[in-house]
Length: 378
Image (cartoon, rainbow, N blue to C red):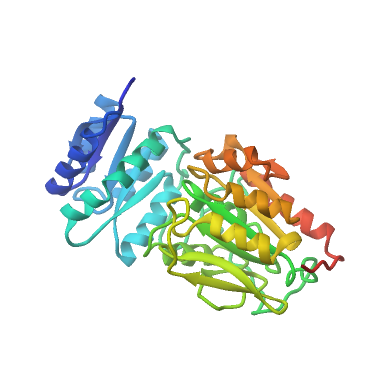
């Protein structure tokens, strides 16, 4: 069996050594090179043609994001970012995922050696996923921090014209969907490749959309930046979920990293539940937890969306949602970075429709519009 070949790019000799050791301990992968700056890495990639590279962000002679941007335009390949767990590190990581990185590992600021050893299973798992993932090219034009958007599959949005339309005020609704937005609930689950897939769905939803609840597999410290980035692009308001808050129309709520996120009801209102609970399907937050609560408390008023991701988290619960009367959309294989979670949802019988990513939001809007005059309650 051919081993996964990896090039490590990091300016720290200690990190390069540790990552090389972690990779070489695996029976199915080998580190074929380690570079301390992107210029050397460029030559290594050209000569060695690795399957995956791991890439630090802050390096001498060329910033990791600049290197990633050029790499994904000229020679797209699987990249796993090694990011520092800081506010700036989280913001840059979101940009790296937008540019085409498959995933990231958050390294600690202190105790790097012990921290990376503890993360070794996560590191090699993400390298394996990256090696099998679909690669997309980066946008042709540079994207500036902090808020930007890559072109969609249909070319509807560009970096030069991000969406900043007026939003509905808290609890208010207007327009075609306004009459049903307080009753319906949109529930989204995603993992690897999900940050860009979620963006593709949300930027096309109108300001009077029903409330939206989202679980994206992500560690603590990164979901705040993820929510802020989306909030600058969408008609709706996007934020991290807080325990006990009402889920409002025109708002999307993202599960905080390291917490379990679910919903319940208080009278006619949907409420957010954020808690320190055990991992489910090895994940915290878990799509299974969110979708099961949506089945219980939203039932036929729910719309489920399963996007790209590795594994099977949420598939069984999405079938439970469908059994409870929800209408579910699943991303098709051709547009997934990783088809694991959508495949499992389809095999579980959870999908009403299987669609390309750029068709999910239009299909959902059309479905909501069909029922704009109907008022179903659980």
